[in-house]
Length: 354
Ligand code: 8NA
Ligand code: MG
Ligand code: MG
Ligand code: MG
Image (cartoon, rainbow, N blue to C red; front, side, top):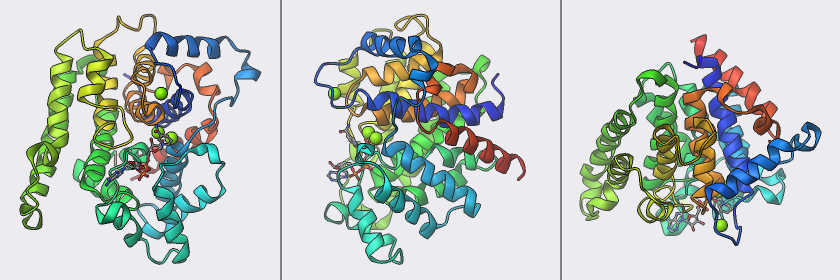
């Protein structure tokens, strides 16, 4: 069983690899298949180390994840103004290829205009005051699971909500980010030899049901007439994941149709969770690759928002299998490796000293 320090490194490096590898496939005009992704990684693996080193850039997923980590460590907890300032200032200096979501920069600009005094209103006013349900909350949330490793899932929920709501206030964005955070949190604690994918889904279902019930039962939401597919969206998707895990023949088309591969939380976060769980179960479809490698290759093969789905799946898989499962040749390709390694060590130290 991978040691905890290795799982911390695995989670952040796994997230980085998902982003850097996945970003190479965004906007490709051709259909992506697992064998095309395998070809891509094989070329990288065969490159000379000096050619490989930092040859792949990271995108907004990593830029924002680093902002979360820096702020949590510096402030020893959540500090609204500090984290918001880091998100925005990183955006203002980052190269254009970091490809942020199309609306989230409006939040950064509004914060800056207020000299970082008004943090709450800009995110709430997005999308005609419904708030964003983009997957920008989930893509950066893994460090919250590491930070609260020694605490309860309820503490994780509190932290996940605060980090997400800075930019994403739609309930589907908030619940989605928690689903991703909880998946990483549980994967850090899971024992490979006794691991059951179904029990993992049941643990996720129990918590998501609690929070989705709580939201739909709240007095102010009762007159919204939320249909159950919307109000219990994640519970519903977790049931689909469970039914997929019972079968050996689930095609990429069916996964995309039922779980999605888009930029919304609801169409990408359950997909990332499934990519990890399927890679535990299915050792044959992508042969000669370990569980971490299968997770990344499979997540990207689903096409769509490849960097973000792979970054979320990679954070869970790295937490489960640990850093030793991630080929060194893959790690070396990524810009941001040193930061991920250093931050994982600092978070581990922080948690074990508590
Ligand atoms: P965001 O908050 O701008 O949301 C992303 C998108 O989701 C928006 O542009 C809208 O299209 C849609 N959306 C969100 N909330 C609503 C709503 N309430 N009503 C209608 N539409 C809504 O940005 P984000 O930080 O959530 O974005 C994350 C994604 O964008 C990540 O995948 C990230 O990598 C980036 N990105 C994605 C792509 C892609 O298309 N694959 C390309 C470049 C960048
Ligand atoms: Mg494409
Ligand atoms: Mg991105
Ligand atoms: Mg993306």
